[in-house]
Length: 159
Ligand code: FES
Image 1 (cartoon, rainbow, N blue to C red):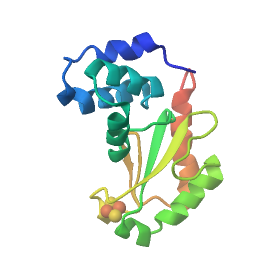
Image 2: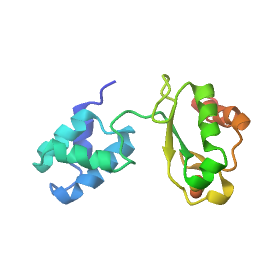
Image 3: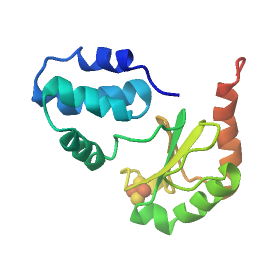
Image 4: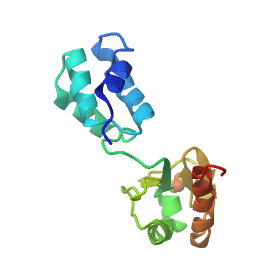
């Protein structure tokens, strides 16, 4: 579903008309909508009088910014060296089996997105999986389903 242009404009125009704020505005759009809609680039480029391509370049450079809608819960699997040795790829296989998506994808119901990240600085508790802001340490492949169920429950009205 497209995001109304007025909503995007409201976020954009809450900042002074100054190019210095382009990254902050992109981050704000990301926070508000979960990704940066295509129209967001056009509206922002017009507002700041800069090229849309420059904003795209910025958005693709910063991994935290996304051009595609993400799921309501973002699963980050650390694939740094320590976590890799401790089985992060088996963890990703397990997520694929349970959710039907691989890293970089979002489930059809838009509940979960899966991503890989580099070292999260928590190597001693690897393999680490972070869902939203929650760290799940030493995750075993057979625990994945149970962990995800807890987030699915939050989606239900009385969860
Ligand atoms: S390699 Fe995963 S937390 Fe450091």
